[in-house]
Image (cartoon, rainbow, N blue to C red; front, side, top):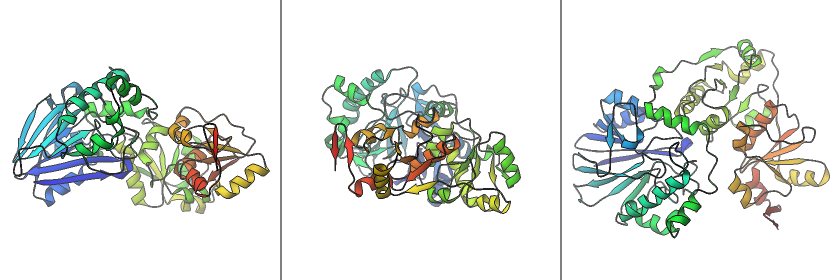
Length: 463
């Protein structure tokens, strides 16, 4: 049996390919499908089957393009109401691929159409070897139950409890667990960093599986959920119909600085994908910084929206191409142009740059005692609740999609997150919104804690 996990770090997304007797199956493919075609060619395999465990909300799947290029059948839960050619999968659906048997379990809960795939490699044993759980069961967590237009979160959470306890946890303890996401994904909230687990390990360590009783489970898994980005429901609809091939997207146009400047003056959004340190030193006025080095596509989709038509700024053509693919992975297909020659070309054209000042945590602590200064914390609610700088104002980065925070424009504001990635995004959005007195806190709250500076947990002050 051939088996391979493909992990896409920028989206915390895991997809899989397994095969027997030269016939391959792909589970939950990412938008750009060349990796599966290359692996199949290298291992002399033919991709014949594509399974979607559900309608993914956080990324656009490549199932339609992969099927078109291989002739494979697509399988998805019957409740998906998919409009592309597919096999509608119901409980106990079975498929034999060489010596591999695949049994589907309908497991609504994360979404109404969710399925899990129980795999047995009969060359070794008829007993189950692994279960591909999609977003039903994660390593350390379970799927969020608030992604349906037809069911309330409480209804989905009840279904999730039933299917976890009556189906998934009926599997033997040694069965491997392969989910569709890992730590960092917004499809859950407490995922661990490991990329594979077992039923037995999850039974003992997964917080959601320790909750006693259905009612208590519903209460806990529906409370304090991460903010659901607007594009999640849009991506699910794209996946229901099947996305076009990446090669069908409009080519990006190179723009000289004068053309680029005119586009920005006409209301265009410049998206600078360089690292935060480079952006701080000098950038095109009004540009938004979302660096490629972090969860670039997720934040671009959440903050700009899928209808945006950003023009890109990067250091190289390779970065431009990478940014385009990553944006397309979440369905943001409107990127239309890029600044040819990057910031260097902008400067050579005699056009001005602007900067964002940065401050270390020790200096920030001193200045807070010596002069008027605001602190803006842009982390998510659980991070804020776990500890924050005293008297800081809280406005999570997710909220910037709606409006900038209500802070004093005439007093310096020091912006921080956990480590510095999100805070520079926030600084660029504040500057674009007309806030001039903005500084970025280097190292964020992690650096603040490492420096053993005091912070607040609810009513207590920790020193």
